[in-house]
View (cartoon, rainbow, N blue to C red):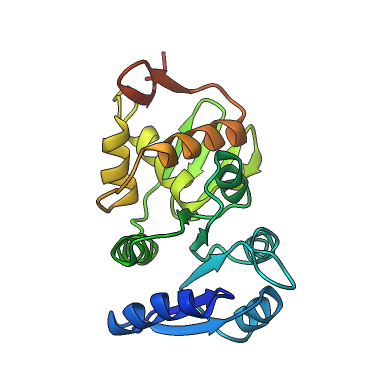
Length: 222
C-alpha cells in the first residue's frame, strides 16, 4: 500500500527539498504551508506520517503536534532550525517521535521516515509484560504504572519494551540506535539521552539504571 506523508512547512524551498525525493521514493506526499491548513488536511485524509516544522504561521508546530497526538499515534518528525537542548526536549515532551534540525541531509530524512514507517507497519504482537509497578501491553501499545496509563512516544515505548524483554542486559547508546531507531545514526547521541530522560520522567519510577561509561539497563527482579 502506498504510504501517505503530510508535510507541514511554510518555506517553499524546504517544501521542494522534502517533497520531491519523498515522491521519487514512492510516497504520496501532501504539502501545506501553515498550521491551520495542516490540522485541517490531517482531518481530511488518513496519513501514515507527518513531517512538521515548528515555526509555522497560525498554529505553531509544538501546538500542532500536541493537537495531533491527542487523537492519533501517527509518527511525527519535527523539522526545525531550533537546535537547542530545550527546544528538542520540548518537542519530545509534545510526544514527537523524532527531531531533525535544519540544515539537514535529505538522505537522513528518508532513512528516518523509512525506519518509523517500518516499525509502525511491522510491530510484533506478544503477551503483556509486567515488571514491578509497570505493565506493558505490546498488543495494545499501552503502558501503565501502578494502574495509571502513561502516554509514551513510539521510540519511548520501543526502548522500554527492549529493556523489559532483556532485563539485566546493558545496552550502549549505539545498541539502542541500532535496535530501536533502526537506521545509521548521523551526529551525536543526544537523542538517546533525551528519550531515556523523558521515559524516566514519565514512568516516575527509578528502574532504568545508568551503567557509568557503558549505557543503560533495567535490572533483573530480585
